[in-house]
Image 1 (tube, rainbow, N blue to C red):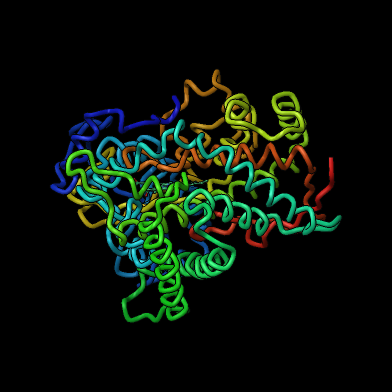
Image 2 (spheres, rainbow, N blue to C red):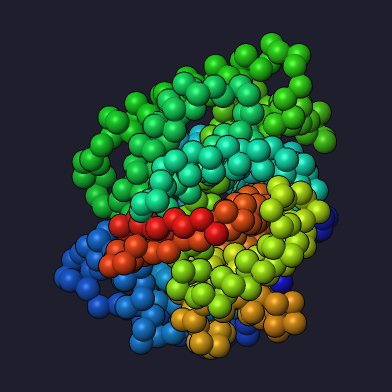
Length: 483
Ligand code: HEM
């Protein structure tokens, strides 16, 4: 089964969303309604602090250790005085993200740093305010709407490739950095088009770099006592101020301008709520545009980086991919009609997101006491879902460690559990930018492969670093060869 794409075509879900604030629990659980209660296994840690030091040092390693002896079970992690629960079984994921999603909110603590940056936006809000924003923004993110950005994206990628050629100049290049520069340009272009000149773009990109590092650093610090000083707090706050100033100036200028830009900011400015007929104020526009930027650029850049790494390790996949791009597009620039035909390219991207999901974990907080498959969870408990682990459960994936895009061929996808694969989340909060990601990655992969062959630099170490995204710890040094 494919992930359900458009929940918002389902009126029933909209109605459910309306009740989200009241925490009404809708028990459409796949589990036994009156189960024998089970005890969650607890992962061994140190006295008092439990596994908190390991969580702060390497959360992915901790999660891997936690499920090693208890695959598919809900596992308790003692984090100082707090207990969190790690969830990996697709049935449990489905229950939390979809079937009973109203009872699993985003909570305050873990999202606090994101709220400091993104304010009260689609990604940070809940209940009624989230629902109204999602209803307002959803129409801008359908596959058809996103496809209208193809030409602009192709233009930006082409100009970035000209820069890339110079940077490569026959030597090695840090592909992670290159992919970040590329997705920054595309994302800024799609959101602000010509309103963002070179100087503003540089200011914003520098500030966002500090913000993303700050977010990664703060990821699990909420489990520490409140008096614990957070390093880099002043730089983080300054970067928020710079971002505010830059984006609010653009928004105010755009309100005065009659010129048509055709970008996302314009669509946000024109959007009206279907009930109240009101649009967004400047602060809301600021919060949403910054959210689209931070949610979109690093996740997409990281996905592209892993794709280049995996292609180098799997020459047979690279050959097949190249053949598809040659047949469908040849040497010209791709169009949106071509993108629809790049089926194998899409499968490669999907499989890369299984093996290295850039959004590698999700957090929720239980709203009212609940029981999942016999495991009792108290209100206020943090649950951590880990795409990286669920995507590799041997019970649901044949040879899970092997990179094999054929898994995503339509004929092989029908039997899959809908929540054994959730790189874009699931349920009503699933990623609104999913079609953007597919478009940007398909275009970038196709246009780069038309010109280049990329090889990993011999001896360069590659290891996944779990921060706000899952990225290569040492970047990705690659050698660029013309085809
Ligand atoms: C490879 C790239 C991306 C990945 C892996 C990714 C992943 C995710 C995931 C896992 C969620 C669910 C979060 C949760 O439930 O707590 C999410 C939500 C979201 N994503 Fe993405 N995303 C990507 C790109 C984008 C892009 C390009 C945009 C915008 C243009 C975007 C905008 C959002 C927004 C606004 C939400 C919140 C949706 C809601 O709660 O209604 N994402 N994303």
